[in-house]
Image (cartoon, rainbow, N blue to C red; front, side, top):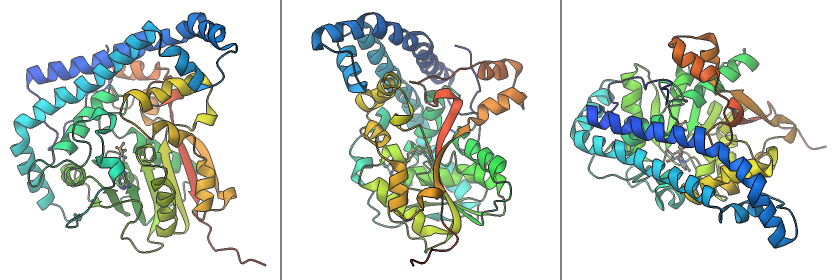
Length: 409
Ligand SMILES: C[S@@+](CC[C@H](N)C(=O)[O-])C[C@H]1O[C@@H](n2cnc3c(N)ncnc32)[C@H](O)[C@@H]1O
């Protein structure tokens, strides 16, 4: 597979030996092969044999993604596709995990050094309890999830996420894995050029991939990334310091933060919501509303809700729920997020969905700072369902908090 971008090095990125790098590249290419060569075969398989067989057995054509799944799970082609996908996913984490285990003491020492050299805050409350929907399973098959700590000052799952997500996205989230943050920032720049947030909160920041572009665009703003994963925020704090950016991080639950009312002008999240739960999501919206100043913006970037896509695309995406340890993936996409935002206190008229074009596509089109080969590879890429950003854009839910509460007549 053609490499798009190589991951940009930074002081706390785990270093791979030649053998480790070869294995990691293999998992990335394997994933690429599945997506470019096996995934496209699902459509003709469905149309030519599965839909017909389903109709014969059930007396009606498949109506929705559940019917499509019922038909597809018995099909040998689909079974091979799904199994290969799962194997690639497990292999990619494993290829990084081995490398991290080998150098964990150095990574911890480097994180401490970098963190000590910045004046940005790192807040890690004693006895913090992450929610069960995060700790109960290894989300997207990532060993240890976001919260596991194997020793004091552990950063291993942060390092695992940093390198693993680069392979997971096959480089399409850019050299710093920051495409989501960068895409939302570009969207804000384009659509709200006068917006100057004084304080910015990134909920569910993991290792701060998406958080840092906000500091780059709004250098005078106080930027906070929060996450329930201790090793993730520890790593995030050191990583930001390694990039020379003063960004604050805290181990904190987005359902109930410790920030004062009306503290932020911009509250964002990037692929957080689908990793929470049906009870947590309304609380996160309510918390975003509480900490937003009047006139402030809440922006959640994720993949689109199911009602914006056809049943076959829904079926493809919902494979994440079934085969990638993402229990809330499908359920979240069925929720009425606009109604949830309204319930949290936003006015319906001030809530909408839009698409933030992927920043990597824009870079590629402009051939900014990337090789000709990489630029062409991305510019020609037509992202489809089953990949991470269908159509080449992130779906953003945008809600503005009213400047002043309307007084009931
Ligand atoms: C897919 S990752 C987000 C990736 C990150 N936003 C980025 O752009 O790179 C989801 C993150 O949300 C965190 N998370 C889940 N529930 C949370 C909550 N209630 N409060 C804060 N963080 C949460 C997880 O620990 C995990 O790090």
